[in-house]
Amino acid sequence: MVNQQRKERTMTKPTPIDHIRIGAINAAIWANETDSGTRYGITFERLYRDPDSGSWKSTASFNRDDLLVIAKVADRAHTRIHELQLQDRSQNRDGPDAEPADSQPKPPTPRAGGASASRAAATEQTRTAARVKARADASR
Image 1 (cartoon, helix red, strand yellow):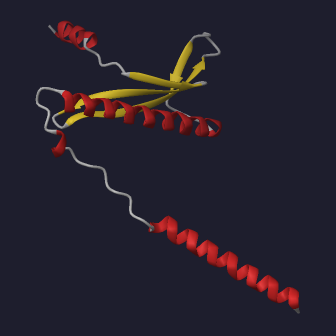
Image 2 (spheres, rainbow, N blue to C red; image 1 turned 90 degrees about the horizontal axis):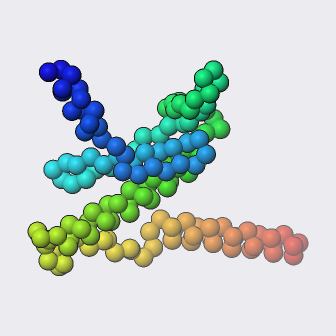
Image 3 (cartoon, rainbow, N blue to C red; image 1 turned 90 degrees about the vertical axis):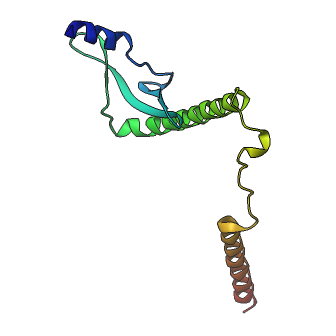
């Protein structure tokens, strides 16, 4: 009976829904169905060839030179997950239990100004002050 249960678990073993790979760094994207919808997770691995056996193996340990590649793979995985979530939302919207379009949440409206505008204004004030000082110094 234990063997039967083990065999059933092996047969229904979850698999990643997508992979993203750059060089030896691989990210697997996993879908986890929950009551509130699909949640996505990511695992990272580095592929290497075992010098003794010559076979390919993987590890979840990374070195300094892997970090930027991991960042690029993570960025692509992030983009892919957003694409998958958009597909999920559009399928749910078009499904039999879909709510009317008016009841869908609307994205927030960008506000004028904000931190970016404040930084830009401060930078411009600094530049203007530097120009005024340079002119004053030049006229002396």
